[in-house]
Length: 300
Image (tube, rainbow, N blue to C red):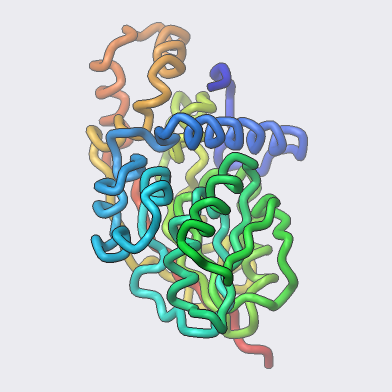
């Protein structure tokens, strides 16, 4: 991981800073998929195991139907394909498609007449996803390299957008919301799983490790929903919510322990798990995994 540095989690950063944040996120996830651990922490529902995948909403039947490499390297916080109305023939776009678990599940929903597109910025993730899709025997999936703030996808071409714990990692969320609205067809829908956070303290914003762990880049739920509405989506709502306790929050940062200890030292605090737990209690009840729905209005 990179050294601790200030991150203005809720402000739109300068382009150069946004690029640096994206580079740090990409490096962290490339390392995570290579060593088989999670940027969201190995002790949480974001952890990279089939058991953790089942705990965040994937059914045993779904997981049994995909290659083990796809379930063993999932870094999400929910199952965005659950409870959706994805139908045969639909075009589905997965933002930050990672190792391909949701690509595979969506591809089986849309069938041979449909199409699934994954967009990811990390070469290692793209390579892993392509291997997993090939192992699943699917020919209706395409994985493109790109950033979610500037999607390599045609305007008005997508029926559904899904994403799993990715939008919180963007340093330019208004751009992402605008891209969601741009690429959806009139009447197209999105259902994404993500992390939202209320009143993040300054110490939590000061670690890039907590940023790539899906914490300090998260914005308030009201801002998230408001951003989607401002981009032009309608019927925006939270359909599911899970609020994290202190012990669960410690899991988010499990793989960033060294960086956290450096942060504690800079803050003049004991470099212990007790310190981490005390700080996690400051965040208890303020961070949640949510499933967010929105719809692009029909053309008038």
